[in-house]
Length: 355
Image (cartoon, rainbow, N blue to C red; front, side):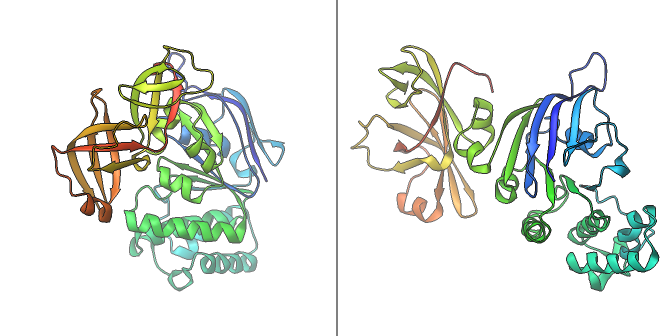
């Protein structure tokens, strides 16, 4: 069952900027679609509009082709999981999972059978008699999933469900959610600001900025072919190099990369280079290549299995390079060293944008 959003808008004050403005997209049936963007992009507001927890000022929400724009939340057939779990502390795990079924007046025998089915699905059947305060954060979040799934929703809406958990538990639950989705094939909408989370488990990504859709597509499309400087900067942590078009190339000092076909001589350009798309070398002998620049190592930052190298180019621009630790050890550079930077890939936009 697909989710279709048409020109949705929502203002919380007459004079304020809209939290959501002219948003249109489709979440494909049976897929996980991530709403990805920085804080304040309108992701959670959009999810609440789809859930029926907010009513839009303009536009429509369709679930499986049915206009649900003004339909009460309990009739939309949506399961919602929040970051805060929203479990009832005075109820056991079983009672929490059964809550929505009781609201729906599901017969007792069916209700009990479905609760046990959900607990097995989320691998908590041995903890049904415990209270939320006796569970870990990851277990509480799985109870919240079980409660949302117990009502057999048509779609599943997740508002940063792993945001309050530590890194290891987040990673475990991402894998768990992926496996759960493989079993259920429920159309799922996931709000997140975590790029890795969105790119890892989604089949479709909607990138948002300031209440609008910046780009929508597959994870590969938004990562490899960003539609705007914002998306290029936001996805993948790219460094920005500014220059001009010279002889059909985007020139940033001595360094140049291929410019867009429509670029005109002398136009301003911005090249976005991701940290893993730069190769460093100690030898300066081959620095005459067009896609190569000399740089000075300003800072080094060790991050687990790789090292971040902050490089200052002759133009004054700083680029960040991620080097696997084994390569870095072989490279043998220290702060203050001059190195050769080979740019293997860059995304270039014509114009001088403020990100």
